[in-house]
Length: 633
Image 1 (cartoon, rainbow, N blue to C red):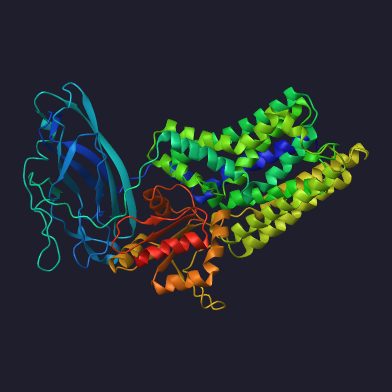
Image 2: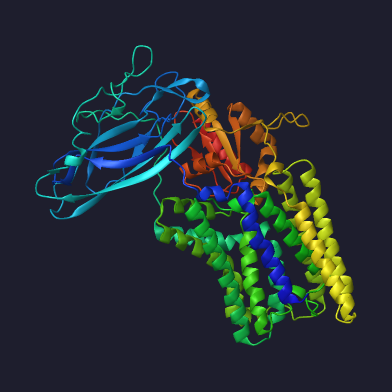
């Protein structure tokens, strides 16, 4: 087995993962699903006139047995008020109108609630500026933020819809929407028993253009949205910071040996290696970006598959054993970096770029969460630019070393120390294998965990056989037998240890930590539980986490601080854990509603404040304490 064969084997492990992840639900994401609710922006006019008001409405069409809630919740109703945010063009004015009356609807757990089902129109009155140019056009946008429920569960619904209107000298009625704006149903109001007055029909139409004061909850000061250029800068900085995150350390060890080995070599070859590494990083980020956009997945979502994590553990084990010196790829003592001085070694740099991206996905760095979250509301080409800048940030250190040979010459000269350095770096890879096994134990249970561990032993045996008997000075027959036994051991190990869907762990509710009675008590998150706690005016702290997220595990250290625990208990904060270790559509939508596409995300709901306070990706005792201090104001 030469170096090219090894790379082929390694690539096969990653490619095979894609097929096996289908058994864990990733293939289902591409299947069309019926939306629980759809949103559309409609207007009473097809052309608006300068200074003349007209009615517009958000049209919500609910699937069977689904409902959303009104602008305000009647007493005793648990849910989330529907909120409309209008980022209108400059000079355009909006006036609130009464919404149609809500009515009794079946909700989760066999209970009755109060809201909208069927088709409903939520109206407003919009006035163009008197200076609007006749013949021009304006795009009206509205962001709908609601909670849609059926008898089984509730999911966040966040959608931005738009409508383009022309500006004419006189308004032009839109005959297609005449029926929607033609009558005046009862406005949303509270009955004597705290319930709403129901309309006569299942299709609730906009109310008459009577201006009322909007009912809103106290909210935090509005945040100034970042420009696209600022988001690109955030993406690059986030990618750059990934280089110093624990997830990427093993690959950095591999690349350090290759960089040192290149010192003094032909500059053209050095630059080519840097470019090939960058191409590998960018290609993998484009694949991840396309995957995230097409299937609406989040950063690191491939790690929700136990099959992927098992393959990754096996892959890193083989690399670690190679760097530790158990076997060599080719005849060079540098192993992984052996071919990087030759033209054929460009494939190694390209493959290292792919590998760097794969191992970076369990980490979320500062700035990265903001940039990734912004892609939720962007067109695909802008989203792909964000992913491209993250990749350039990740690749930039090695690319700079390649473009500026003076930096390489500052490194120590190649020598015997490199073998010790290489073997020392192997322990980072062994640590990564241990972390992947920890992730697996949180995703599967029972005998499949033991089978996965024993299969890695079998794979290690195959590597030992290759390193012991597939040596160049051994007889050809001995080498061939060793290669065959190596293949059987590795392939058999992969087959024996591969987890299947039936092995997935059932995540029970968090129990009280009897060994540490002062520890925070984390309950399992659900939208219904959040709504109930907020309705009871109780502060709610939510930790969106995953076992495969390295940054999430680092964040957990802050919760052992005695002072921080006292603050949680003093303010009677309910602590909820949303575990995204496995694929969970409800959690994904909740993250999307917060403008996030990756974990960790930690939020605090303050009683009386509609919008949650979102903490930094990397938690410290200081920033969590500062968030909890907001409850005392």
